[in-house]
Image 1: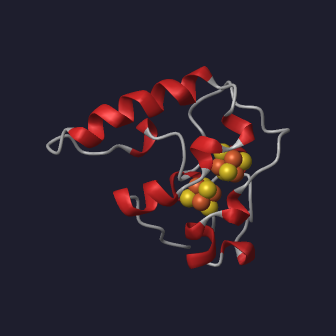
Image 2 (image 1 turned 180 degrees about the vertical axis):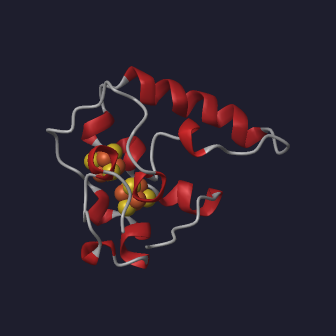
Length: 101
Ligand code: SF4
Ligand code: SF4
C-alpha cells in the first residue's frame, strides 16, 4: 500500500482540478468553489470527498459527470513523481480505477 498524505501541501500540487477529464464536470467545479471557502476557514477540516482530486490516495471520484475517455495528466504531477506512481497499480486514471497501491 502506498501512503500518500491528504494535506494542503499535496492538494496544491495535485493537477486533477485542471485535468481534461474534469473540464466539463459541474460537480468538480462546484467542489473547487466550496474548497476555496474551506481553505480560508482554518477551523474547518478538509474532507477527502470535498476535493475533486488526490484520487491516487482518496480513491475513485465521487462526481459522476467526469469524462474518463479524456487523457489523464497525473504523470506531470509532483505528487506522482514523489511517490513513484509510475510503478503503482493502477499507474494513472485514479478517478476511474481507484487509489494507487
Ligand atoms: S498523481 Fe494524479 S491524483 Fe495524485 S495528486 Fe497528482 S494529479 Fe492528483
Ligand atoms: S486521476 Fe488523472 S484522469 Fe483523473 S482527474 Fe486526476 S489527472 Fe485527471
